[in-house]
Length: 168
Image 1 (tube, rainbow, N blue to C red):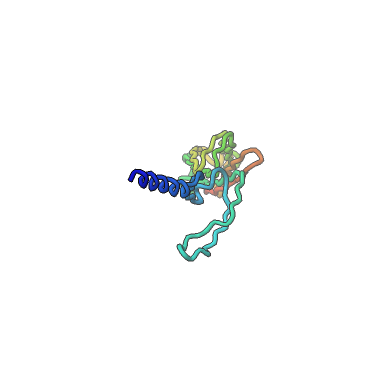
Image 2 (cartoon, rainbow, N blue to C red):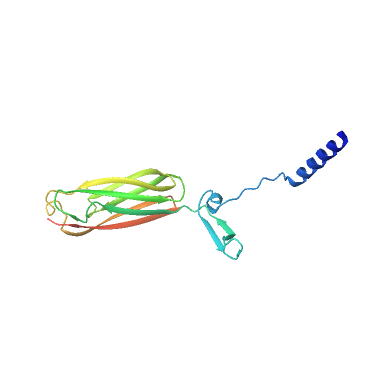
């Protein structure tokens, strides 16, 4: 009897060891495969059994990509009004020593700083008070532009322009 228990135990051990592989398997999603930078993918749904797309190719890049959005609290301003600006910068990577610069209203408004960006949307706020007398202050009424740029050396530069209206 002990002989049969030993044989059955040995056969079970060999069977289990034959089914076990040293290489771990992991089901990975597209998000799991993106470590740093953008991913270019070609997906086909030829797999009709489970209707899930299959990933054919990936191309990893180290390209830094910034997107910028610029908004003001109003579109029409008058003399001595405070203009509040929100600058949203979206980055595809964590980036240090990034130059953020804005100017406009006939170069009366200037804002610049070196910032560190994290992956995702980074928000910056600033304000500018218009002169009491626009004509005396050298600002004519009408449409004025505010331009903001974000740059990281020669790797990535992006600009966005916002138009506002200034009246007496």
